[in-house]
Every structure is written in C-alpha cells, then in structure tokens.
Amino acid sequence: MKKISIKTGIPYKGVRLRHLHYVEDSFWEYDSLPDGAILVVKKGARFYNIDRYRDLGWAVFEKAALPDDWGGSFDDYLWELDLPKLVRDSSAFAISPRGVVLKTARSGRRFLVISEEAWETQ
Image (cartoon, rainbow, N blue to C red):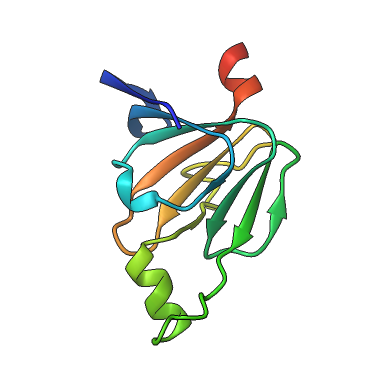
C-alpha cells in the first residue's frame, strides 16, 4: 500500500481529506489511518467492516469474521479493532458506484474509499 500525505487537505462534503492510500488486496488496518484518509482501490480489493456483504464491482465490502483464537464477544472484537461501516446518511455522504464513505464504530473517523478509475479520471 502506497501512502501519500496531502498537507493542506482536500475538502469533500464537509470532511478535509489529508492522506492518500492505495489498497490492492484485503484491508482492515483502519487503526493505522488518520481521520479523513482517502483509500484509492485497485479493482477487486476487499474491505472488512461491521456491515453486511456488499459488492460494488470495483471493491467488495465484507463483514469481518470472529477469529478462532478470540476469547471475547463479537462486539468486543469489532470495538477493539475499531472497524467501520458504510455511511448511509444521504444528508452527509452518499454511497455511489464510484466511491463510498466509511466511518469507524469507536473513534468516528471517516474515510473516502474510491475506485482507482474514478480517482484518476476526476
């Protein structure tokens, strides 16, 4: 994954996006991302979250599974990892075929997840 810092940030629907990451495979290291990170997705990448399964064609969003060695509850696991869910509030961010916004459960950090094609053409 390539990381690029954007010093001034890019305003996007009320959030200043400051860091750019390229995602190629599976991703769930949300705790390493600052609020307002942009995740540019290579086609076929998988994101683990607390939501149900959703295939957008350019990326797959999949509910994280509880690991075999976890001793606590599923909710504790999701809370500790601070996994996100898709933001569905149309007044704040809209889900589109080319990009989605994720918001983490515990810290409330938001990330723009956008297809590589959309990022390069816009």
